[in-house]
Image (cartoon, rainbow, N blue to C red; front, top):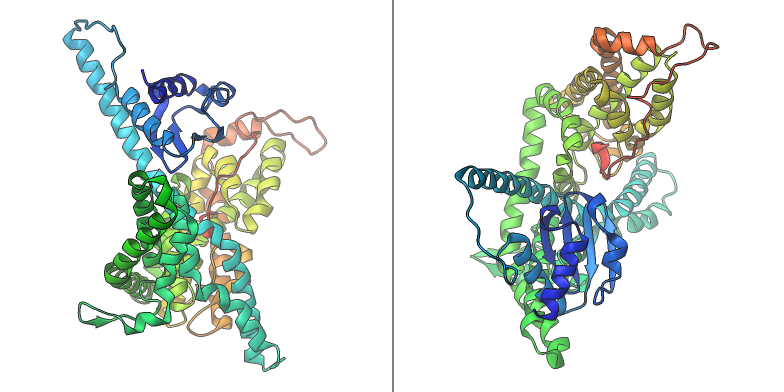
Length: 503
């Protein structure tokens, strides 16, 4: 057994065995192991293994630092041990019954399906992780741009507005560079090389390049092209590090990475991503301009279930693309109505069962965060555990989304110039085709309708008879009387990572 095989076996033993491993991959120095049960991992034992430089656990994801070269061999051996292709020495074959074979087949099929589902969600999380670090700068530049727009429209401080314009636009003009850097980093490459490839998209010299008979334009392909280029750069770099001798790696690897990934980005990805970006913008504008209230109703009503499953993260690149292309995203204000409907539902529950101290305490703790756009505490601590309030919250979100969609249909589009905020915190970031005033009117009207409908629907239909009886039994007759604890609701809520209206 080689050192790499021995190390792979030790890692396998400390992470809970092959049945606890959902996926294995590696970058230049780290082994990334996705586990099914984090509780089954012996992290101290893993960190104590000779050859493991460091081991970090982040939920179900383990990052094991092994160093270059060795990590590639260990990844191959660990995958072989996990899949069973590496047979222990001296293992004897044994006959099994047809029933046992059938059971094994069913288990393998279920495991494969589970891994497939896991890979889909991990892919979404990885794409979302490219854009999440950009959100603070998007919010900051968006707010500065909003302030500058108001000052310009009012004719105030004309000597200051050019200064603010530069502060707000500098980051956005280089957004493709930062996306390329984050994409390369997320997929195991060197960030600065991903940035070099992403920078090609916004380079002025692009206007002198003709591809397939079409002259390219600086910025064509936007963040989608930069993301694809950064990911490609990471894969090219990882391959080159495997095949390049160490003595010339410093020169050869980055040069070939930028040359290959940059050429593909310039020759293919910019054109393809440009078509996709335009299609996304056109589709979003057409949907709300023509579907109007109906489209807003559907989008606002079905957004909370997306948040619950984590699928909302797939919308982050779309929001960023729309902001990069038109200056705002028309989808975010509509989707934010889902959280507004939930606030109305939570207030209704608070009023109806105000003597239930456990439920009231949970709502009091989660409601301020919800008003600022962080809705997971209300989802997982209040509406979803009770069942029906989650549905009535979606109904409130649907009607609020319908109102915002109606404004779009009437020609007064409501957009957000940055992501990362929703509900009341999105108000300073509004803009649209008819200016801030119309955008504020459309968004504010949607919020009010979502609050009211979510409140009324929950008050009338949000609690079944059995749940109502349980909550009232746990309540007191008056605020001064003793309170019986409500175990199903008196829980500590840990919000999951989300973006913008996803909250």
